[in-house]
Length: 488
Length: 66
Picture (tube, rainbow over the protein chains, first blue to last red):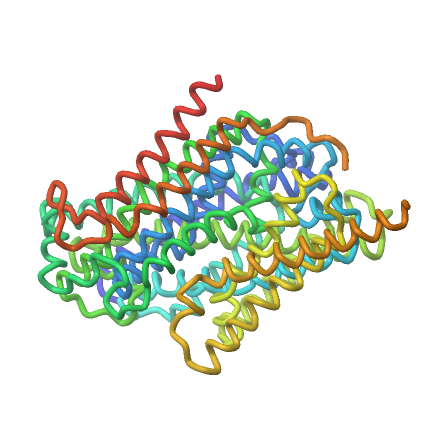
């Protein structure tokens, strides 16, 4: 391996080693580790700084670091919808999350599916919610392994077997999640979250200033190469205004339907911590991912040839600076992927152990038993994710594409149901089935007829939600009519 | 279902709806390639500014609540 590759790779592996050591050391503290709520939601004890950086590290993934730059390289201005997704998610979170957190604390809820079970008292609905959460999370775990693989490939200049190395790194993550649960994840994420922010902001602005002297110079250069990247519907005409608007609304509303994000909410010490976390997370996006998004435009303006669009940010850093900066920024990318993978893994495992095993088969299971089952599931899911990372089946890509639309169908069950007090499980179940079916049918039609856009250009999140709410309302009205007849 | 421990604040819901609207309804007016502000295309300028405004509004809501 050449000296540059050795330096850059060493920095990445040093950072990974530090985070694994933090995770392992924290797990040795045995902070009331025998309690299930300590293992799964850190005993609801996290203060502002740890809560904020932990939630940021779980939310901002390898996609933020590599994918959004790749998206702007391919689709131009449409990539700005991801800013709206997160920021509108924080607005919704600021208003709704304290309410959800209070209920979760009062009733000792540990997962999103726990919340559904508590609200509707329906095992069937809980099982469906758990399965939806787990299935749509699977490709995201695999995506994080692949992101680390891209990073290893870049920093080693192709000298290391990238996928094998990323799987070994993933194995170390499984180890500290297994031992310390959420406490290990949260304290490791303090380090990883801070590193991500520093590298996203520093790396992006260093590149923009180096080549263009600021944003106006960058936009001018893009306008001379491909002006279509600066407006909608973008370079290939695939992202019209209606798509952008429907994506912003749909994904913004669905932001908190991801089970791992709800679980990080439950870790907060109090309501004030959650609200401060939402405010700080919004500034995290402004300082970090807003500028990473521009890296696709930079690659376009400079005419950089990329192996794939996801290589935009990391390739630019490699060609612009020495191996030390490349190593640091790449370490930030690895941090983003590993922290998200850790959060996903714990959430998936706890959803299986709590909602698909404890509450379905053995309700009398002890806290210690629940932790043991969760640990076993962590290992099993880790092995499955590793196998999937090697096989990379087409099904995973499909799940990834419909992931957001799929989980957002839980929105009525989660948030509408809190305020619509007379809503019952029958209505929610009907809406959920109708919504998910709509999403799947639209996807199948797009595949079969090779459509490049959803019907009328409206994002499938909105189509699914519309049918979901319609079915829910219809069944609700029917039930009310029948129940009033019975009263007479 | 039991009552939740704390309720929603109406003015916050109102502010939230306004922010959602600002992210979406002005798009047809600002999706133009011929207008620049400070050398930045209008569409990009608007969404950078609205992102910062969203974060500022959340910050102000928190400060006012304390």
